[in-house]
Structure formats: structure tokens, C-alpha cells
Length: 149
Image (cartoon, rainbow, N blue to C red; front, side):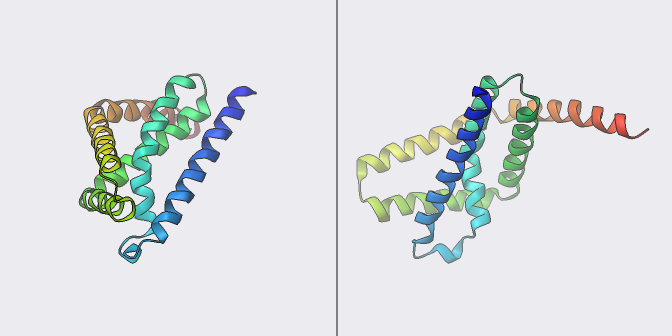
């Protein structure tokens, strides 16, 4: 179906973006200070915003909602557990932009985009936490109740 094809395209695109970003990251002289796991946490911040958008595209898809809930919960838990590292990583990303591009207009645009992303996510964090908690409570409570007898 067209929905399945679009989902497949979304996941393939996310994998390609992640791999390309990591290849750029691997070429940086200070790459040994970071790990691929931590780099994935940074990327998950952006993918979480994208997945939230997909909720409106696939409201009737149970499997996709379950996957998205788990992914969003993982992303936010990872970020909350490594908040000081996220702050360092943001500085590292900005430093990388300056080192690689030397382009002030692009730096200004990138900084504005990153700050906008963080502000948007922080402003909706309470609602997202409530949404994820209610979805997971409904799904997993029903599942465990069904199979506990």
C-alpha cells in the first residue's frame, strides 16, 4: 500500500541521513572524544521531531504508533540521562560548522535552526511526556493484563 511504501521510504531516508552524518563525523580530528552511540543520541533529537510529525500522517496505524512511542521515549530518556553531554555536543557541532564551512551566513542560519529546534522541543516536552505515558500505559497495561491470567 502507499502508506507502507511511504513508511519504508521514511525509514530508509533516516538511515541514509544517519550514515552520511556519521561519515562526516568520522573525518573530524576530535572524533575519538565521542562515540557512535552518543552521536546517535544527538541525531535522535532531530528524528524525534520528525517522528512526532508522522503521528499526524499515520494516526490509524497501531504498529507505527507503538514504534514511534517507544522511539520517542528512548530518545528523551537518552537525552535526559546525558544532558551535559548534549550541551557539549551542541558546542562541538557549532565548532565543526565553523571549522568545516567557514561561512558566517550558514553558521547564523544553522545556529538559528538548532536553537529553534531545541526551543520547540523544550516547549512541547511536557505534552510529549504526557502523550507517550498515556499511550504506553494504555497499550502495555492492556497487553500485560491480557497475558497475566
